[in-house]
Length: 145
Length: 145
DNA sequence: ACATACGTAACATTGTCAGTTGCATTCGTC
DNA sequence: GACGAATGCAACTGACAATGTTACGTATGT
Image (cartoon, rainbow over all chains, first blue to last red; front, side, top):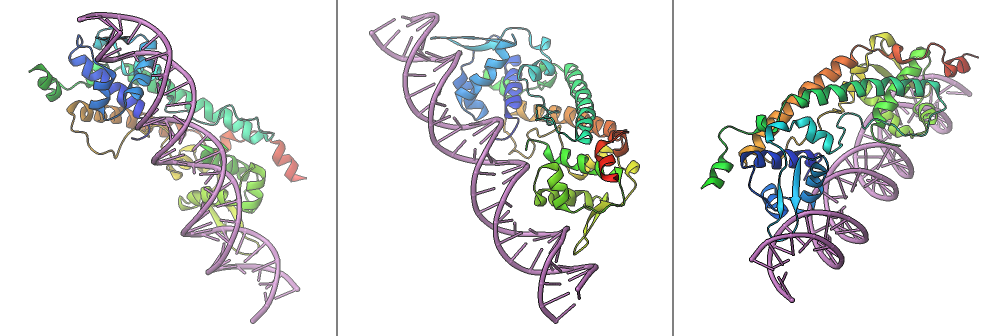
């Protein structure tokens, strides 16, 4: 797969769940549909569970389902749950340079990046999972039969 | 070094050049000060040259210097010259999924990300190289002696 | 008890990027 | 014109991160 597949996988899965909230899905089912591995699914969905977005049940009839209504989940919730930080990635936690130009620069750049990060989250908060779910969803229709 | 070191290196170097625009610097000098490798410096500064921000001269007394006034260079110019795209990185150019949820989702997410990318560039455009250069710069004072 | 599914750790694979080496080319100086 | 110093460029290497994979432990319902 590619970079940022975690966010993709999370949104994709949540979107499907939004279309049929009561259905319990196993990580194997999800992985199969998403073209990835059950363990990867559990890793990603585990983060979402920590954030309280969904629940998992072990054992025989276990699996994953939403723990809150889909329209109560914003893209920001998902983004933050995965603690991805698309924007920054900028050199923090480096050993401090002895060059005054460098240090001043870092401060400035970090400042701007933090601003952007914040505006990204605010923007993501405007859209919910249900908003990204197509009105007529061939996948859901398929499952309904 | 770390991630995003290209942007760091570029800004750092330009900032120094802003403090003494007529001085010609070799990639070896720059690399030495930045704690990196001459070839890496040439790779990064080469991008900036393509964007018309600075010039390089080969041969004996060759090296790098600004080709435009420092206050005419915004952080956006540098960012775009390196074509980094801090924000996106989201799964583009993937093989198109046969899942309608997936495709609709990608479109939405890309939309938001592009918005953010744009706002980042606009924000960067407000700050010039001279703005991130400290008023009293110990490095420049040092060189002046 | 047994099958099923999550939870987690350990390892393998892959992709990316800085770093490195080597060589050709260009330019100034002797 | 020969030589030294610098960029330009291509290829290889090594570190690191993220995904993929295997394996095993644990919990749960039949």
